[in-house]
Amino acid sequence: MTIRNGFFFVISVVLLLPLGYFVVDRVQFVSSAQRVHGVVDHVTARNERCGRKRSRHNCTKFRALLTYEVQSRQYQIEVSAGSSRGHNQPTSYADYRIGQLERVAFDPSQPSRAYRDKLWDIWGAPIATFLFQVAAFVAGISERRKDKRF
Image (cartoon, rainbow, N blue to C red; front, side):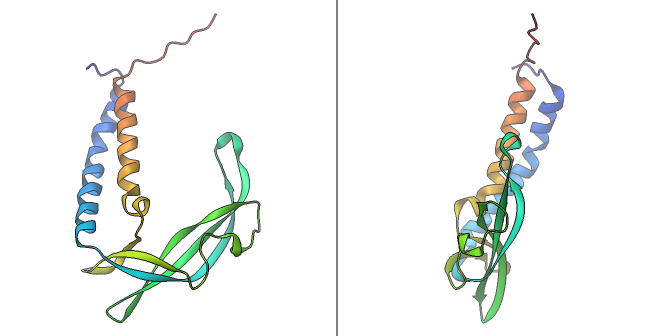
């Protein structure tokens, strides 16, 4: 293995620290987490621009406020509730409805620390960090492309 681009290689090594933290943190969280049903209390809508650079379009992004109870005390988390093409779309287009139940995983020693009980919500940050780390590593050991002009 030959290091071709030191900057990206250093970035990939530096990303090992947060990656290690995220993995240990999430493994501990999952091993001790308890699950309850949260109730959607509120759904909001906000006009945004969605899509990738070349295909940006107007959209409405939705957020849902989930309330869950632990030992007679209520806690709340805000989660994504999807999006819809076009501005000023009604909240009826959101993925959640007021009163809907959604599973929530929380830390029993710190009940305010919670996630929707979904793979991406719990493991999203470690997975994204891992993908960036791998991309930086590959960029660090790959040869630079030569400009092929005729």
